[in-house]
Length: 270
Ligand code: KIV
Image (cartoon, rainbow, N blue to C red; front, side, top):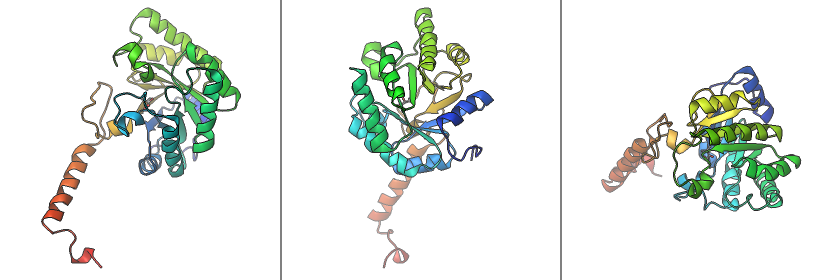
């Protein structure tokens, strides 16, 4: 178990972690079984990410996943978790058109899943929606840098904010998100130096993915770090297991046992 200082993680606990210099561990989950395992292993924040669109549904991008599908994943996670803070992504198309729609989407997630907070992508363009959601009492996590819901605008998943203008805007957006009340921000795939600068420029926790070490915490997609998705190999990804090979070998052995009639044996029947 990584840490048991907190029996239940809240937005206040992760703010304290930043103040005390304790790094924050965040990871994605999308279903009851994995969320229970992840929670027991001591992670601080579970993100029900719209990466479910990729790893659970097999879509090429995060764009197709719907609000109903996110609520289904989030409520499965909520039923398994006793300790971690649960943050749920607002999916593409549920908050961009106007702030009233954004609030309705956030309320549905909170009411129907029982999660603790929402995350949404974007800086200034998302400001009004974030303000309205926070005014309704719903904690919001921002997401800057590479924002996968805008993939067709960017044209690729390459590192963001390498140029001075975009880097300056990212710092301004980080400060703006703090000033309107976000409790944290995900920084995705930006230069490590810029991520450090952004993290130092605010008091709220900045959680990095492909953003180097000098941020307040890290987030990874569960299936990637467990080695279940061998095609995806960005530089920032560290694999902590090789479930692809483990699962392949186990299912292959089972299949051979069934074919050879060695499963079930006499002790495995009634
Ligand atoms: O959807 C997701 O998994 C995310 C992480 C990559 C931060 O937003």
